Image 1 (cartoon, rainbow, N blue to C red):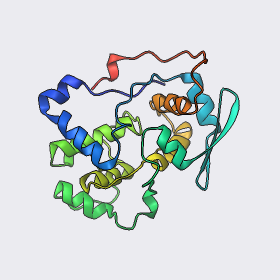
Image 2 (cartoon, rainbow, N blue to C red):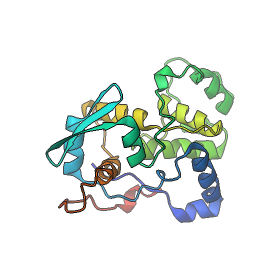
Image 3 (cartoon, helix red, strand yellow):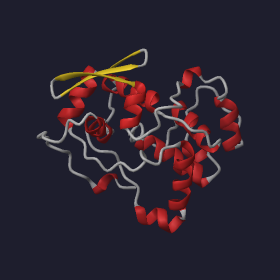
Length: 215
């Protein structure tokens, strides 16, 4: 269990992507969410994940041995996203995965084949897919593309406002049951606790920052 990797600011400046990022995130209303500076806590994350559930548009969980119920809108705000534009990938009729994949790779999708970032033609899009993987889903498999990541990239290209909170929650729920999966989104759990005003007098042991995960 560790904190999410961070982007090297010098790399962004050298490549000119610092200004691109600001524009992209402003378009989708992620300007308050994309910089993750909170340190994660192993115990806080374990308690949160072991009690996390979604019932309609309510999120239930425990923190510091107390039960909490939040609306998706409130959780979206506390994570730094808009409380509007919350999407469910499975209910998106306008997003066609196969057509979108062909538009960014120039290739017809092959059945039962994993999509990879190396196949994406534009370097900025490749970088954004990796950023989505290690930031929102905090997976070490940043070269294999999930359908959720493709969907979010679609919204970014279309300059559509979107909150990924529901996508993130469903991923968090299944992670504990996954084999050989490193839990790397601990900073998001800390941010959730901060949004509930739970950290002011709390005593927590935080996971130290590691340069091993700095990209």
